[in-house]
Length: 96
Image 1 (cartoon, rainbow, N blue to C red):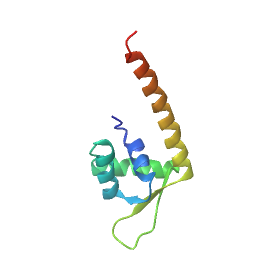
Image 2: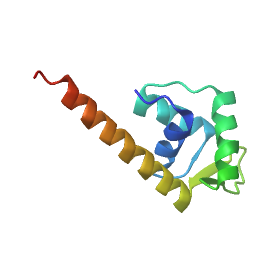
Image 3: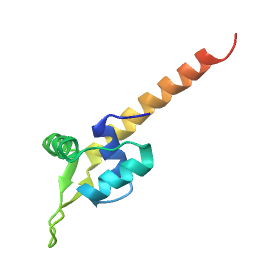
């Protein structure tokens, strides 16, 4: 199970803009992981600084976030690495 907050948040935003609570619920459904608000917003701040996500203007209380092209590339790279690791590990688990 992937539990790295950065990857979970990027994966949540991969299918569209979301505000914090919507991301927490999506991550819970997607990965079975409950992120606390402190963990979520700490990671959001770091990812904004890295240019992986951007906060959008909102007329409501809730601020939505959007995945940037750089964030999408990072997510794709990380998922590719995880996919290779999973395949190699599954091969190791097969009986000789």
